[in-house]
Length: 88
Image 1 (cartoon, rainbow, N blue to C red):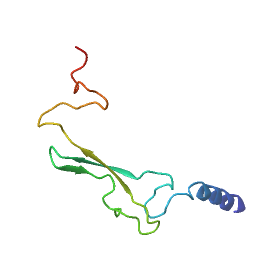
Image 2: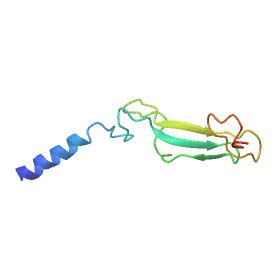
Image 3: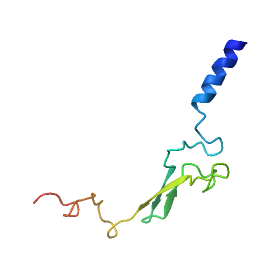
Image 4: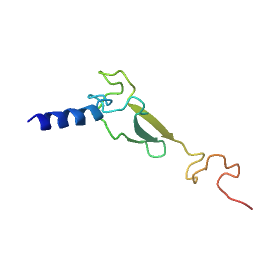
């Protein structure tokens, strides 16, 4: 029985950095939530977890807001000055 208890203790120690309420590591950025203005959709992978964890008081979400330059436009790459048209 001592072997099982020590093994269980080691397993619990490895995951000891995670908050038991929200499941985030101390250095984690949070869960990614995507907001798409074109269709009004919000994709939240953990809707059951509050915005701020009641136990560790961390913000649990990182929001990515998808914005289009004009309706129906293709994506624009970061740093692309030609607006996605490519070389001429």
